[in-house]
Length: 234
Image (tube, rainbow, N blue to C red; front, side, top):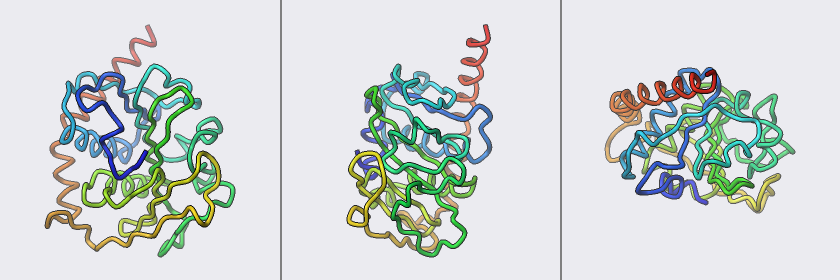
């Protein structure tokens, strides 16, 4: 799995059947914006009926996603990361700090406060393709989702793991399975132009555009989430 190919490989190109966004029980604004950005990316690149998209609550155990073929996990690290998820992540994250666990060797250039965003892709033990987009805080979650939803940027993220140090800096890796990333597995750091420019458009234009065009998607997905909750309660 390569993040650079997103959204291809992370959903059926012709149908959203078996696809789900997985969110915390009470998603914050950054999480909803991330879902909006990624839903917009899916909608631009793939065909299919958006009504097939399901929105579910995050589970501590990836085994809970066995009914799905593709799952996108969204939210801040403290709301998403669990011991059982860590056991399958290419680069495990500390459940308290949201930083890479086990002294993983990563590039953190120009990052002094330990705030990092992460994008990790893996196949779960149940066969589902899982994409995790997270961060230590709302800002880093937004930075990670912004990079992933920007075609000219994500194409440079060749690897199953991407670490976002800032809106200007990211690094991609190909770890060998779950567990710590060794020094010789690290990818080259990618220094991005400020402001990020894709086809002459600065990143704030992309954010505004994604926000405007994705508003209907957000409304639909929130409605689906509430419907699922009511169904479970009944």
